[in-house]
Length: 419
Ligand SMILES: *Cc1c(COP(=O)(O)O)cnc(C)c1O
Image (cartoon, rainbow, N blue to C red; front, side, top):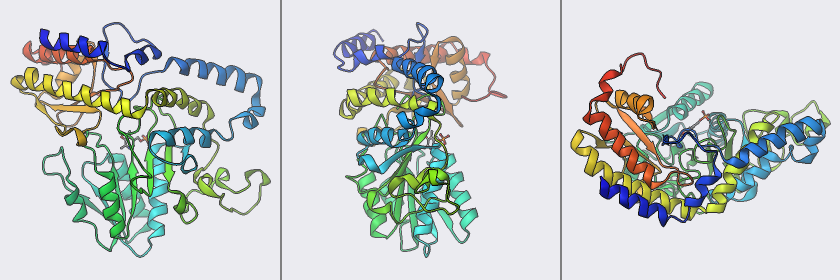
């Protein structure tokens, strides 16, 4: 292990992004936080943004603040997020949660293909997305969901999806990066295949944005949603974003006709007329305070550059896999993420029959915070803006200690609230 520790130190010393770690609020010394894929850490600048938003904008300026930056916050921040994912500034808005945005765009897409019955997705998709699709089917009737299957629970090759695409498919929707194994779909190829079948595509970028490069325009993607509290570091429950390609904005309709999506909200007309462009996908008053907190995290990603973020992420996940193979595989741990870097996101999942109890021991007595996903996956999230190589080496050593010393035996797997 000495070897890995020394290598980690050298990698940290040569890391061009290492300095960004200090731009986050410090956590307790010795704590290794590997859950940035669930809740990103707090940028120091967010503390100032919060103080300003509460004391000055809300405190002093009160309702005048609507004209001083609140009203167009969904558009202004959307334009910044657009730079991270290859979209135009007027193709992205911040609004609602990822789930609500997914529902709005799912219904919009299905209504735009009224003669087609089928929604294609895959069984590795995030459960909330699958629930929302079931809700769409419940609401619109006469539709059904077809799920492509994964042979190993880790990968889902494009042909298993393509074989489900035919002239009956209205919508193909996938998580670009899978929440469990971290598998990354080939967005360009699958979007083209969906278009060949005449279907629209809706991509969930929650585990990609801020970690894995995305080129929505380059892939000619139709629709997308994504989360701002994971690798974007926008804070717990941060509002999410949605993307509609410019040439579809006129045709598609949001199912939620609220006043913020009305052409002239302050005319208080009795009749709904949708706003032009993206604005009709807003529903009600934006949650200004939590929305403001997104900006510092986006600024850090723009400063780092997604190319550099991806390069570090791949180096770090590669290093993790090498250590897992050398140190943890002999202890019964299996890798549960893709080995092919092109298909790998920014977290590494490992499996062990005692994964839940190992996870509990790591959190309660080893000062490591990973997370656990049923039935036997531990996810180790790598957030290149603040995760360093030394932490990865030390975390692997702590996992090994828990297994070698059977420390997990002190914890009960039943009745635990799962993190
Ligand atoms: C985290 C995540 C979400 C989050 O949805 P919320 O509405 O914010 O709870 C949605 N989809 C995927 C794929 C995610 O990973």
